[in-house]
Image (cartoon, rainbow, N blue to C red; front, side, top):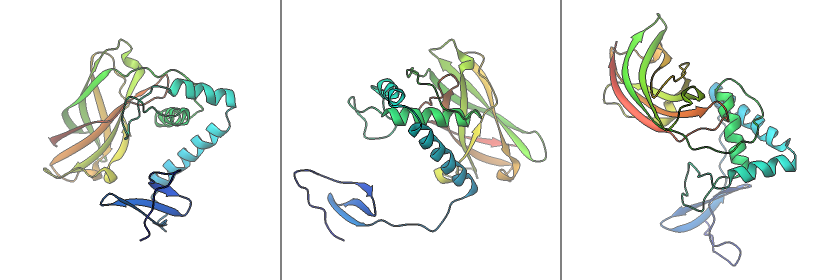
Length: 233
C-alpha cells in the first residue's frame, strides 16, 4: 500500500491514470495497481458502452472550430456532479456528449449541433396510479408539473425505474431506463411509463423513480429528481 507524497507539481491525486489507481484513506493518499474485472457487462451495459464510444468518436470527428464553439457554449454551464461551485463548469466535450446521449435516448441518435444551454423549467412528477394494459405490461401513471416555460411539448421525461416490495429501498444499479411516450401539453400533464409485468409480481408494490427532462431541441438533459410511491394492481 505505497503512499503518495505531494510535490511541487501535484499536491494531490485521485482516480486512475494508466495502470495506477490513487485512493484516500483517513485523509492520506495511496496508490496501487489498477484492478481489472473480467465481467464483460450485461447486454444493456454493453449497449450503453457502445453508445458512449460512438459519442467519443463523433467528438473526435469535429473540426477544431466546432469543438471551440462547444467549449464556448459550455462556459458557465454548471456540472451535475461534484465538485460543485460557482467556478466549476463542464467542458465542451461534456456538453457535446450529453447532447449526443440525450438525442440517443429520444431514439434519434445523431451528431448534435452546438446550441447555448438554456435553463430547464421547474418540474416535478407525482404518482397517480397504475393499470395492467396486457398480460405482459403495466402502465404507471404520473402527473408532470412544469413551471417557467410555454414550450411544454419541447420536453420529454426519462425515468429510471425500480419496482420493489412495499418498504423496499432503492438500488440504483437495478433501475432501468424508460422513456415516456407522453408529450407534455401544459403546465400539468399526464405522463405514463410502460414497464414489463414480470417486474411486478406483487399486488401491492413500491415504485422508485429517478426522472429527468430531455430537451428535444438541444438534446441536453436536466438534473435528476426522485419520487417513490406505493401502488397496487
